[in-house]
Image (cartoon, each protein chain N blue to C red):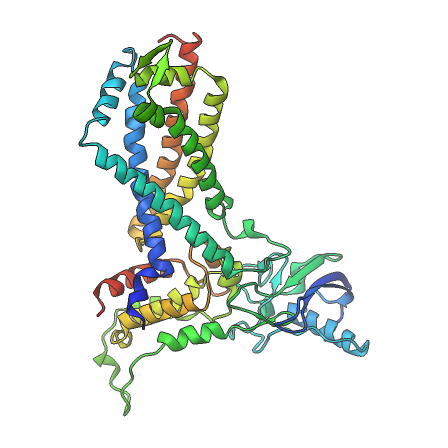
Length: 227
Length: 253
């Protein structure tokens, strides 16, 4: 047995997939908690304070870690997908896959690619101007992330995009959450119901709350609902 | 053989050998009894083809009672056809309607090359078994059963895993052509028994390495294998393999 190869095989690549996925699941909770503060009707003070806290030098390594987490998750998926494609070069004429599995469990690559495309747009909207170029609001240099949020979600199509992408996220999580536990060997009759239940709750609640934020901000900006 | 009144259109994958490119051929067939098994229906077609001086359809079959795992066939988009927990030989024509078109394909996986028509080479499974599917057995008389204490739960669980007949439906159904259900069932059946302990770590490492070498894909936990397995092997075995592998990879020399 080639001992060096132990850590290079498919099972290990899947552990990495599951672990990086769970890491990103934890990150989403942090991200969501901070974003929800943008809804506090105090002119964005709480949100901006938290955003400033995230700019502190101690947080920087965490940000790098987060990027590494994303990159590992994406590259590992790419490597595994290519390997899986090679495992079946000639496909079937007829497939009745819905009879044996859920469509979203078979579509993690497509759902993930949509999320990656969104991630790039999302970084361009907020992270990049906030971290590097700075941004101008009302013609003057600004460091008010809350104002940038209001400025961005002033546009209806951006709000629609942010809401639609949460559907991709929801289905990606619906499979990914429980799948990560199975990959890490955590399958036991005593805990399966809890893991699956938590997975369903997480996959519905988190994307729903993420979707609610731009919608509420849009409605507030345009005066449909009061602050 | 009983005769009935079912008329069907069969669209069957024909491929001369591994090297040639295959294609679908369409065969109308009549006088099929709903009580025939799927393989008997193919037998009727082959007798007709032989009488017509044509090449009969090559397909794998042996026991025809659902225990050998030889019969394959991807029928209307599902391994072993539309019914759950049966092999193709145990599938009967009453599961189809008169006038149906039935598309029959071989298992599709790089590790299962087509030998001819619907017959595929599944010796990759044999090589995975040879890599670790054995126990150290001392020669001599069988020892007293009470010398090997084992809980009823573990014995039952091991037996359930050992019910795998190695048919390859898991690979055929999996979008990644992954063999994880098969390998995990084999790893589990030994890992749960006292007799399997001496090679417990080396077994899982060797079988997984061989699985990868054969070119099977990875497991993305869609559960298609479990749903299509004629023996109802559970994907909890795959989680066990994942645990066994982690432990073995971290602690083996």
